[in-house]
Structure formats: structure tokens, C-alpha cells
Amino acid sequence: MRGLVIKTTGNSYTVQPRDGGAAIAAYVKGNFRIRGIRSTNPVAVGDYVAVEQQSDGTNWITDIEERRNYIIRRSTNLSKQTHILAANVDQAVLIVTVAHPITSLTFIDRFLATAEAYRVPAVLIFNKTDILTEAEKNTMAEWQSLYEQLGYTTFALSATHLDPSDLLPLFEGKVSLLSGNSGVGKSTLLNALLGKEITRTAELSAMHDSGMHTTTFSEMYPIEDGNVRGGYIIDTPGIKGFGGVAMEKAEVSHYFREIFRVGQRCRYSDCLHFGEKDCAVVPAVAKGEIAVSRYESYLSLLGDCEEAKYR
Ligand SMILES: Nc1nc2c(ncn2[C@@H]2O[C@H](COP(=O)(O)OP(=O)(O)OP(=O)(O)O)[C@@H](O)[C@H]2O)c(=O)[nH]1
Ligand SMILES: [Mg+2]
Ligand SMILES: [Zn+2]
Image (tube, rainbow, N blue to C red; front, side):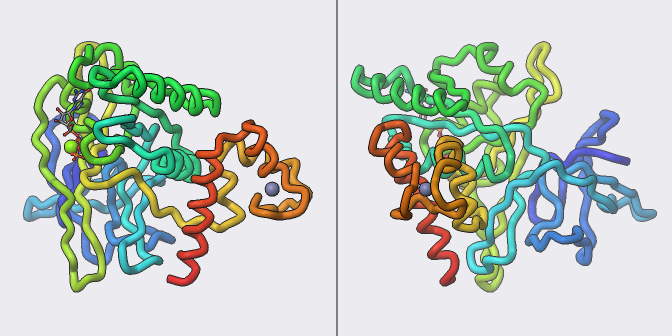
């Protein structure tokens, strides 16, 4: 049988058969590893797998189809070991609030850069429009305009006053990863979209196995509302954005679209846009062609590379 992994709970996996029917629980043999990936979990939500039933009735995952992409998180202490949050993701959706709580621009930029690194399209949803002051609404409009100009799609809405049909087309037929700071309204939006209260099966479940790794349980929720079929939303509890891609310094600017574009005009092809001679980026920031906030976020990611080197 072939199917889609829709939930992981440490040692067992919930697999939705591709040909329909009820989801089943399946297991993975201890020595099962995917070529080339050192990860604490060999199978992730979003994986398409082959399942074989043993004579005793238990189901074992025997194969994983090649992934289109996957989103990883580095395990806390082992920088080389990674945890796969989700595979085969069509889009990453970040819920943003300009107030209650405020999402920082750096957080947004890190999310967008990470999505670029994974080649996963990113979308921003500005939430809680119902409780914003005029000043906060202006801030929201500025932020939306900043990111729209960079080519990102943005929405502004209130999850507590949502007509799901307004937003369902965004999710229809796609696997979407939902992210955002705590309290921005991820669960509220998910419930509104699915038209029901979903039980939060897993708050971040950090099982420190002799301090070596952190396990995160992820789940994919199917969207089945009227004529919308085939879409899934992945809720990764406790994951604030999805940081932790290992980047080379020279690579960072590739994930900031406008910095990359302007950087083509720098004198040196390996310019890091930080004090080099005849750099095109720094003057573009001074002239307002590149937003200061974007440049600062870029520098903060560069700083992370420096730190990672000494870990
Ligand atoms: N006024 C208003 N409140 C909202 C809106 N969306 C969510 N909230 C409220 O904000 C609070 C946090 O919402 P949640 O959906 O739990 O936020 P979350 O992102 O899931 O938070 P974590 O699970 O901690 O990551 C709740 O009290 C919601 O009712 C909105 O559009 N308007
Ligand atoms: Mg929540
Ligand atoms: Zn430069």
C-alpha cells in the first residue's frame, strides 16, 4: 500500500492510504535510514511511503518516495543532525501581527529567507485587523507594501471574523506549513479554516534523550470543506518560524531577493555588502532602494553564520 504520512508521534506514523480508506498506524524499523540524510527522524509528515503488512498484522514503512523538498530543523546540540519537520511542502504561510503581539521584521525576514533557501513559496497573512488602531493599521499597510513590492503575496484579515471561503483558495489542493510567533492566531485560523475545533495533539514535546535531541510531533490536517479537496495544513507546534538552515555567508544574500539583485552590481562577486569597496548594496540602502529593516535582517543572518562557525 502507498500513502501519505499525516502524523508522526515519535515511534508511530499515521498513514493515509493513497487510494482512500481509513488511516492506519505504521512503524519504521530501527535501522531504516534514507540515503544521505542524517536526521533524528527518518520519516516526516508529508512523506509518501510504501507500507507492508506483516503476518502479525503490524504495518511497516518499507520505502519513502523521493522528496520534492523538506524543511528541517537542526537538533539543538548536534549541529550536524537534523530533524525533518515536513516534506513535500507547497507553501509556507506566516501569520504576522503588527500588535498583540508584534511580530518583528527580522522574524519575518528570517522566515522568508529560510523559505527561499528551501525553495518553498512563502505567503504572509496579517492577522487581528479587528483590534488595530489607526496607527497600527498604517504600520500594517507599510509592511504589506514592503513585502508585496518584493513579490510576496500578503493578506490582511481577522481570524476571529473570518469567512473561510475568502481564504480557502489559498490552501486548496496544497500542502501548507503554518508558522508564526506564539499568540498570533495560528490555531484560531486553522480552526476557522477547517470549520471545527481541532484537538491540539501535541504541544512542543521536547523529549531530551540524554540531552542529545529534541523530538517534535507534527500533524497535517486535511481541508475538506464543500468543494475544497486535497489540501493539507501542517501545524508544527512550538516551532516559531523555521530557522536553522545552515547557510554559507556568501549564500545569505541569495535569499534576500532585492539584495541579491542589487548585489549583481558590486565590484566583487563575493561581496558580502558590508564595507567592501564599490559595493552597490550599501548605497542602495542609503538611498532607500533597499529597506533598512531588510538590510539589518540580512546582517543578522550573516552574524549567525559567524556564530555557527565557532559552535
Ligand atoms: N481580536 C482578535 N483576536 C484574535 C484573532 N486571532 C486570534 N486571536 C486571539 O489571539 C489569542 C491567541 O490565538 P491562538 O490562535 O491561540 O494563537 P497561536 O498562534 O495558535 O498561539 P500558539 O499556539 O501559542 O503558538 C487567542 O486569544 C485568540 O482568540 C483575531 O483575528 N482578532
Ligand atoms: Mg496554537
Ligand atoms: Zn556588495
